[in-house]
Image (cartoon, rainbow, N blue to C red; front, side, top):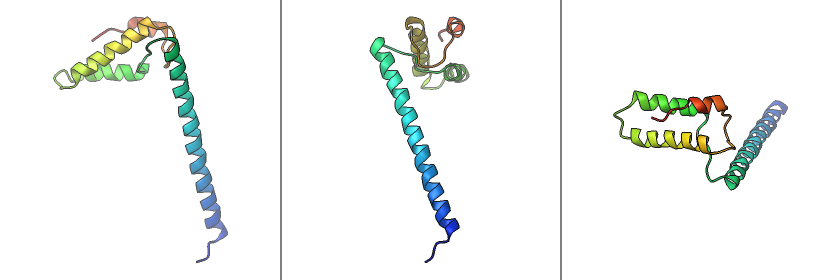
Length: 105
């Protein structure tokens, strides 16, 4: 079986792209986790949801009041709000205005 230059070139490109993307993802993830550890070393807790994720969680809670998991979702929602109100450093990009508007469910 003879491989043409185009096939070999495509294989090299595919491997380089795969390993490049995998390496970039690993480095990015490790930096994020390092930042989380740094925050947790300075304070006992941190925000667990981004503004978008917390808004989606709130919408889900309101749309599914009879779901068996709704109590756990409410608890997690409220814990995130408490962490935002009680801490100075945050992992996600929260503004003070956004935090002030948050309400427990």
